[in-house]
Length: 132
Image (cartoon, rainbow, N blue to C red; front, side):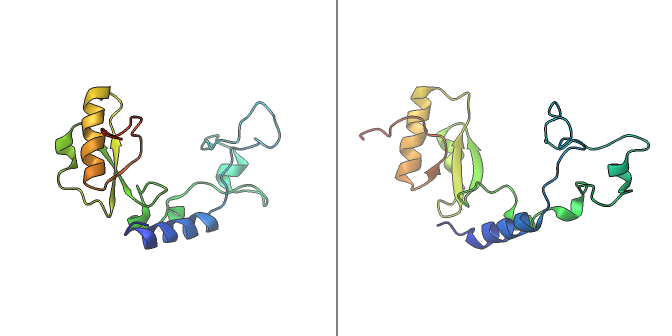
């Protein structure tokens, strides 16, 4: 497990305390999906938090810990790389690598080979390392 284990644990604990935010009246109509949308109506009861039993609103206080943000679920930081030079300055113990979607197969093989050689975690390799 990477060095960000404590940050990942703190992020998961904060997520467990956070309520499930659902779109207003998504429980009432099948055509309304539960994905969050901010209620903006003038007289909207959920926006005003007027009646008890209404779901909560997304607010800044529900955010996770600062050190746990922008981490891949594996605990590594997510770094976008477009060439082999992009691996310079990254620490294999903390940083993971995601190869840009516009990178072709030839350069992708070079990046994956170098990353594996330096013991990096590659999230979207999609090619076999050279020699394997």
